[in-house]
Image (cartoon, rainbow, N blue to C red; front, side, top):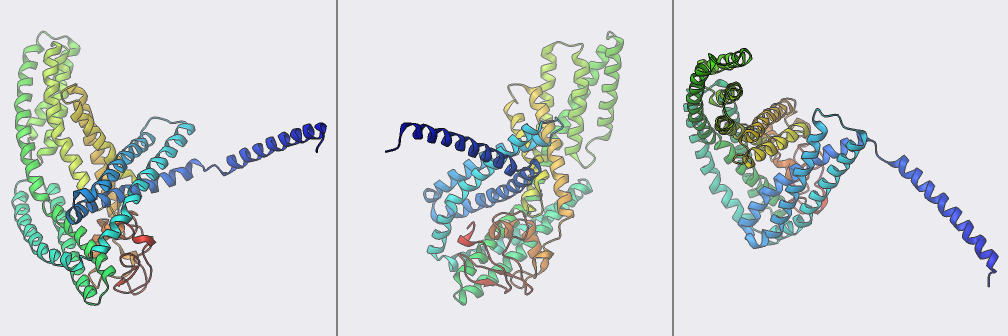
Length: 487
């Protein structure tokens, strides 16, 4: 038995050692704490990856529901919904970091840590349900049936594309070259996707004949995703035509409202103060410029200019009118701003969605903020028309910024040339388009934004790894990440 004095001394020594170890742990933690630059890099990479994962998972959910039923897909749908909320919150934090308001290092560190936490949570939420559907798809062995479905759907979408070209020709005679150029680019991308689908069908048929079911599954899933994108791109002239027609109608209504504003200015001008007369004159000059310009083949831009002119002249009139009159004008501004905001957000979303393999964090962040501002605009449409207008204007600006950043990313993108040879013996153009559209990146690399992290490599070109870890397409080295990836 140990004496009391020894016990007390032992406790004292233990306390001293414990405090020293605690201090050592704290110093080690401080030394190992990541820098803000390291957190920035990790957060940006996670935002891109999880955004790609979510987009791919949303497509996969539709396929899973069609094949296995809504009940079987319900847990995955819930996981996607949770991941979408987490990612939206993460992008909102990224926007706070990117805005013009100075942030302290403590704020930046805390927000970046939260982005990393939310993105990791979203990714885990998706990954928990992906493997079960991968196994279910593999167990079902529906390769021959899916192959026949692709074969039957391919000519249908090709016919839709031909009809879209005719629509685009008609629109080209009416609208500005910039609008037509984007529409033609969409149709060219649709053609590239359909070429890729045909290559996937040929590859899958050969692989099924050879008994390579896993490799055939990869080809078929790539073909399904490409066909879905091709259909979306082929529908762009029809969607754009509807948006432009609505914009024309809205501009005509806005122009009539602006002419009425000019009449009000004329009534108020004589009795207004010098400062008010100066403000009224400036507003009237801007309105006249908008009315003189007209739609000029670009009704969306014209409507945006009309909304801005309407706000300026309303501000001038509001100094001499009662609040009720100003409120009515604010409602008009809201209506005129929401249409171009929706159109600009839609255009940016479609561009990034169909070229996401080349698009990085800045464009995605601006798009997320544009969508958030548009949601605010819709939310406040009845509660506070002026706030709704301001949010819609912000949505338009952020959507345009997102679109321009995405265009810059795509312009500087290598076209998939760094990934080796063609896919399944097809053209580099169709393979590059598949990578650009994020199809192969989402299917084979876990949503890596078009970066080569495994799968497409080797001097012979092509993809190895197959579905569930086996098989090959076109030969060459490299392989998919284990476990089957995402569908």
